[in-house]
Amino acid sequence: MPAEVLDDPLGISCVFSDGRWATVTPGGLASEQLARDLLTGLAELVHPHGTVDSAGSIRHYVSALRVMDAALAERGFTGGAADLRRAQGAGVWVGTPGARGASTRRVLPCPAAAGGTPAAVRAPAAACDVSAAASLAEKLRRVTGSRRIELADGDQALRVL
Image (cartoon, rainbow, N blue to C red; front, side, top):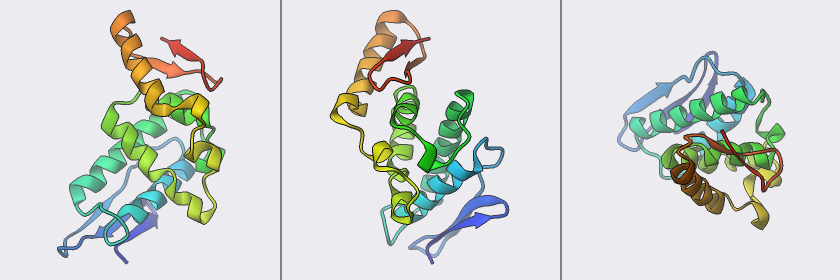
């Protein structure tokens, strides 16, 4: 098996197309269930199922997972992917630099195959276009000088902190 989610400690172990392997454990997470769901999604992206084929890429995805976990924990979230609401996910992605946000968006849909992620989180409605919200947030950062812009609980409300 090219990638496997480990339980104790929680992590991911991968074998790549060149025979090298890596084991990465995120450690110290607020929501182990969310981490497990995201790691399950990541396992589906590892070669030959997907295009992730290096230890550096795995470390990048796990780093992005840590950022998402910390941002959601700051907002009081401790559930798994099935508990994540669209506004919560979008709120994290709007405030997260491009590559890390894109990484968690990419692995989030994958647990759906196992019944873990509701469609409401995987496919934002047109009213809450994540890329448009990220563009708007960047413009607000420039205008206000604020480093933290996030979606409030309402899908379309932005909050400048």
